[in-house]
Length: 159
Ligand SMILES: [Fe+2]
Image (cartoon, rainbow, N blue to C red; front, side, top):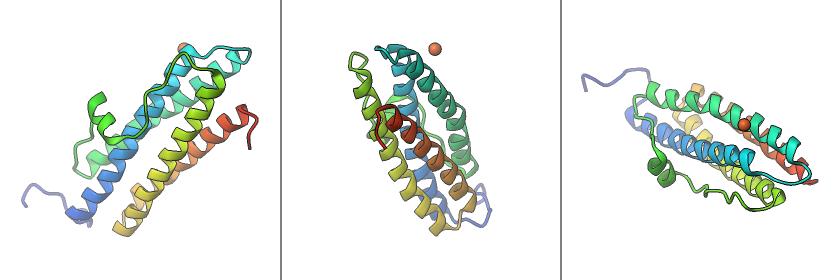
């Protein structure tokens, strides 16, 4: 196809990889959005530390979402955009602003873990496709979300 790109990754391989990246983008946006909401709505004696922890985490996610979307574009697919598109791609549910801080933390731990499991599956596909650049990006995102999950678990007194 004349308007295709020729970077040594076949069309099928690129589409498989961008499907995994699109799911990661949707998961990341959903967890970002929930974390920002909990930054606003968290209450309790640990308000100040959780308000700050959530801000640190949503800021990290907000600044790195762009890298995922732009990797999708570099592989010639369109990046999904919009709440509906993200909701169709991600299993992460909207948060409840009225629940306890402990419930918020536990929910976010589960969300980060689900995101990491999906990203790991995408990593396997990227590796199989020979796309080391995407594999490296996924490694970075897995590392970041595993760290976010650890800090949330530690805030619950869990290992
Ligand atoms: Fe704020």
